[in-house]
Image (cartoon, rainbow, N blue to C red; front, top):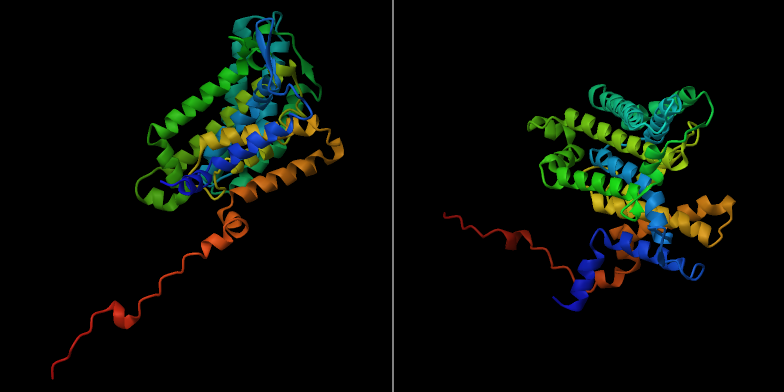
Length: 360
């Protein structure tokens, strides 16, 4: 294979442009922060900008991984931000009522309550979409709106603060010199990849997203698959809710996970998964989430005014999506090359079929 052919094959890989944009965003920070890539050890813990990006991007990675499977089935989940708030509110509320907030049994029980509530929310979403036939954007909008109210009711409209060292480990603690949340994310991603790429589950999800009715006719239980992915997405959002509330040692029913669903959808799209459903990429989603978090870090690093940071963020996302579009790249970069080879002339009907002689 020649060098141009290798380069063409590389640029056509679905992860090339997300990785290229991620590297470019990281390099943009260097002139403003010369030691941006420096990683130092302090008190047995690793610190640095790269570590912080992964640390603060961990909740988004989790939510985006769950969102990937939902989008792969042709759906969408707008309720993940509310699920994040509900999980954190329930967990912190239970811990705050305990006489000993450092008791492991109380912390594990509180986490269990929060995660069960998250899965129930996912079950409700899946039921509305798969069984009742409601459009996913409408079905999940219900919990997106009502879930914030539920979280506010749980917290009484206040920010619940706790002082629990075991619980703080999830989102703000360290293990083996690295933030503990990185290990949680790595475990969830590894399990997801193993289930979707080492078993038939991934193929079933893609077939449901490609054509749910055809999948049902060939014997695939498409409704059950949809309910499962919505439950899994809610579970990922629940774990993210534990991370966020653990990192701040508080539960904020109004602001926890606010608009994280939009960032998760962007991460999935940047990673190369189509919103129409079908084939998906977990690795691409992880890179997409890191792009979003790196972009947020870059905005603060280069000093973009607060009132314009969302516009700047939207502009960068548009550029990334355009670079991923084959049609856009063909028009901008490959228009001339596309015309170098003349198309073959179509065969005439006389040439296409053999002549037949009619005997008289």
